[in-house]
Image (cartoon, rainbow, N blue to C red; front, side, top):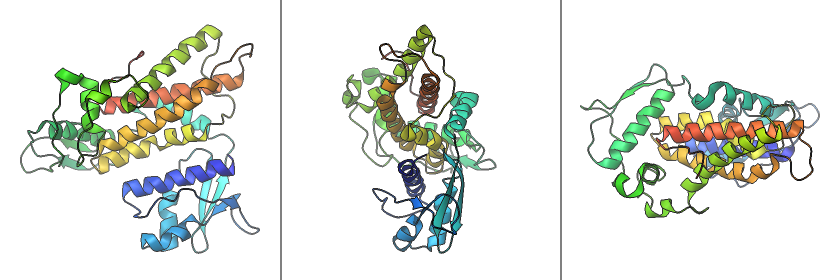
Length: 322
């Protein structure tokens, strides 16, 4: 992990803390990390908590603790220590990317599901407006994916408030109809459903489904070239690895905040990172297959698994072809 990779990883952690509601600050455009000074802990350090403390209305050590909590499973980091008034100190590891890929391969489409909300019971009131029904259905699934006991049993339960919108499956088809209602934040207007039918890069739903289909094609092409996915060497793809590592936290935050749009936005970012990475995966021209290609293919396969799992959470298909 380079200093630039580490800076991006810390930035992801700050953004997650803001999305979770743990920090109320403006996310900085970049975060500075530098070599730890003599006598310091770890290899690199950052004063980001000190710079955010005043606007957050918290002590720098409190801010550092919030960020550290979201860095514990970050690819490339062996450990994070808080020192002094609130400095974050980082110890790097050689190959955390392989650990993320292996966890995804082991968990399959259940990657990101967990027990953080075990022991929590949530009941939702009966609703009739079509968008409210859909959002409630997906939120129930998100809560259950995190170990909560959840259901829409009617009565005096919790109510999900949404800007009304028609679930127009007949005109748009299931996938576009659901994305139109779930991608927008519940209190915002639904997306223009007609635009979601366009097979164009400006259509985020198309990009997400296309990215998954590209993974399937890469695996087929790899098989023909004798390249099978296997993590063997380091892969220089910090953005993609960071997004894969963030996926469990995104699902948990979406469940806690009753916000399926967080999952959709994360899938968009993951798809864009994958599409930027795809051209490096397989040998080109006279290039011979190598361990690097096998590792890149394993990373692409992992990204496809997460895309499919995330789409499934939203009740949207992951087609092999688009």
